[in-house]
Image (tube, rainbow, N blue to C red; front, top):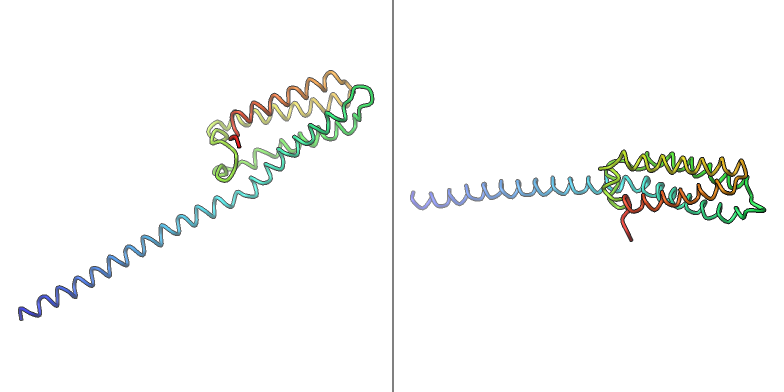
Length: 167
């Protein structure tokens, strides 16, 4: 009888080991699921990140085009106004393209979300500057247009310093 007892203890030990192995496997599966879900959530923002980057690049390109179109004597005022209004429309769409958590995989700093009111105010200011450009173009006022260009460029630089990581 004494020899049977070690065998029973060994069987009980195997059962406990199997329970431990099952627990470790379950824990590993849960952890893997969490990482997969986090990865999926991060990749869910790729469309917003892409759209906002396209928006920023678009109005930077439009600014360059407007500067070329404004030459003082033979400016294409209608095209300048059109591009300025397009920029204003683009800026107005940007806040919706910065959902919480979309910092991962982007060049945006966490300050965008921690200082959201300031970020949103900067976008609003830039929007006003683009509408000022459109108004200056409609009035064919080269001086007001140059001021609006300068103000917009300053706004872009300030926002980049505070809310965008360097390459």
